[in-house]
Image (cartoon, rainbow, N blue to C red; front, top):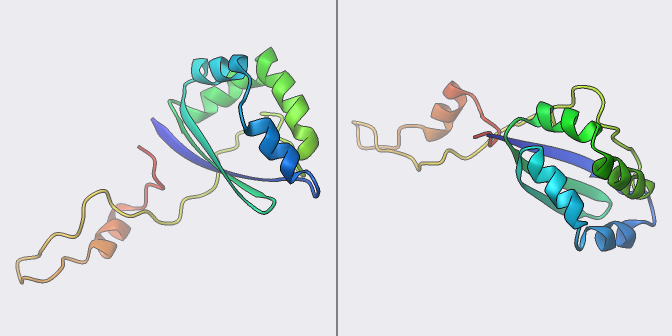
Length: 132
């Protein structure tokens, strides 16, 4: 399972349109996304900036499958009219590069009784960006 973060931007003046269209996506799009391996897709908006978090089996496979799915093609043609930059699902997009994540477990005590430097522990292992 992968967790992918994405960023898009709404075209000026289309904020309400974008919100309206995402109040409830078409059932057939829900089915197509799940068939492509998506377990969940969340969207947050800050002004015209849109942030997505996608939990998916294989993001690249999902993109290839949705690029050829007529349901997704219709949705993209419709929703892209409200976006500054459109995504045609070509290429090898991998989402936003992760910078940091809070480890799943809290800080553990070291043998000297102090914290063991959990922040450093995360840096030593590399940040997974929330990827499962």
